[in-house]
Length: 322
Image 1 (cartoon, helix red, strand yellow):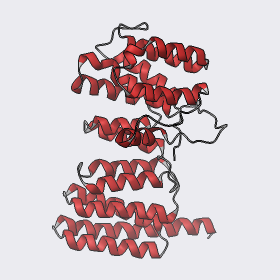
Image 2: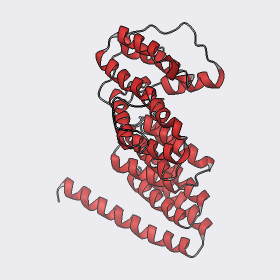
Image 3: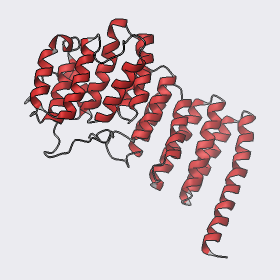
């Protein structure tokens, strides 16, 4: 028998062993022996990990977590969910779409208001970037955004869409958000904020897609450009100016549309950052905002202290912020 055939046989035996164990554990859960089953899952997890059987450990914990979720045993399910992440971290597993989809499914089944859910998503995003302080894998962000959108948690969904590359999905969510929660007079503000923030994150492609999709699909926006709403015309011109890269065009544009930009005090803060990113405007010596507002800017856009010569990303992938 060749070495490759031997490995296949070994893998099949391991899989068969996992299936037999899962059958016994499932029977315990179905009988209502939740505590005993939970403890057995944990025991087997650490046994597999000590034997470096990381894929088997992860698979067992995923199935166990989903099983406990189906019986509304949130605490046990959340505990096994964290062990899924531990197996990924310790095995240095590759970030693959299948794994990201499994994590998103676990996230979708967690109690929406539980602290465990917050801890899970934070740790999952950290793992998805190799344990660095970067903001997380764009695909995972997109999966989380869609889940939160289905839950009608629009503000959290919006955050994750901003750190994905799914401008179209973001726009469709914003149309629903605006139609269900916003005032008709603010339809332009929903997309303006998203476009400005995508640009702050150097994601020019998604900024363009979210604008074109939103203005096309929103039932309260007449076909353009030009648009009835001055703010939408500003965003349209801004995207053209970003493509052109001419500072004078950007400066005149911001001056001419000040009445519209004064509708939200954050707009000019975002535009200061966009000026730095796309038009070479030097950063201000100090920000006029502090406290919570300053923290918001820092969390969204970074500290503004990137190294000189950093290239602007134009491929639609979000900037990786410290």
